[in-house]
Length: 77
Image (tube, rainbow, N blue to C red):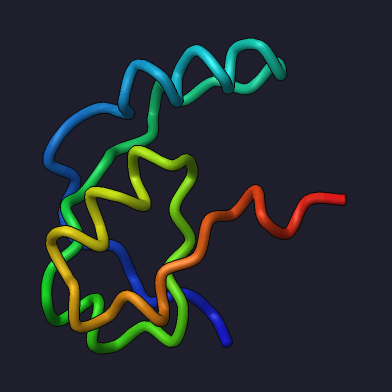
């Protein structure tokens, strides 16, 4: 299933994401970060958190959706 269109960007990418991308030769210069809304969370079948901090923040904000929040690194080989 394709991702739903993103909301209007509210800021540039998070500094941690920028540093990680640069380390892999990727530019996030044109990337825009958005806040996930209740509507987004209700719409999604799964939401991937990029790290433990993101996962904790998402579970704190959306405790009713904890079963659909997954740490992306958990799927790494």
